[in-house]
Length: 308
Image 1 (cartoon, rainbow, N blue to C red):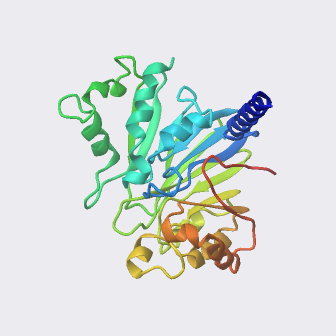
Image 2 (image 1 turned 90 degrees about the vertical axis):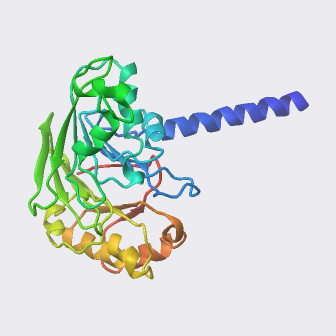
Image 3 (image 1 turned 180 degrees about the vertical axis):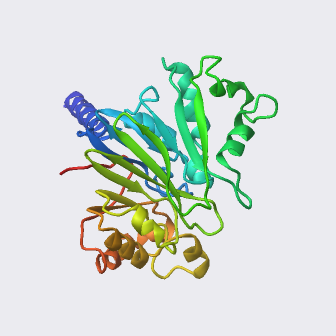
């Protein structure tokens, strides 16, 4: 009897593990958003920090942000660095960028020679530009990871990258990628005094717009995100958040108004943290006062296909 119970427990564990393994990657990979990290800079909420992968024609072609834990979730989703064409960094808060060196180092183990396009914001205040950030990491003389300097020319077993700084002072969107049926635009968004970008990914099958942290005060974002099939918005704070928090992030009412004005087909919420995670249901109720479309509270590895 004890042996049978042990065998049953083992079988159930294997079934559970298999089910989890299957659920980590999207069933539909035609044109699909997958959240890799749905949390923020808090380590005890069981969520990875910010990161999203876009599946296109069956492959992981686009990655937006690489916060803490995204390296692990990237692998769990069955995404592959060999397939990645574009990597967009929204800003240089740690919960959006700390796993970037680990992801690029992983290229050493893959058979890839093509260039990976990377874009990020120009600098300002305490924050560097993408070029300055990459130099601080990979400069051959003084970089923190000087031994990975081969990313600049594809030497030492690494694949090369190209780097584009997107001017955060431009009101108009900047085209940062156009190939393989995908066109990607980047645009500055107001995240307090932090240089920050949102990304719009367009294809013949639809449009996905990913907003990083923003306070919602720039009306030009409405045009940028207009008619998105999927709009991703952070839900980092609750409706009663203090003014300092609201200087950096959008309250639920602001998120609802933005989603309504853009006419997004569905709204996906991410970047839950602390009180906003505890107040999730209440915040969604507030959003629905303004936005009448479907609202999804994101979780790590959840996927959302664009459907006509």
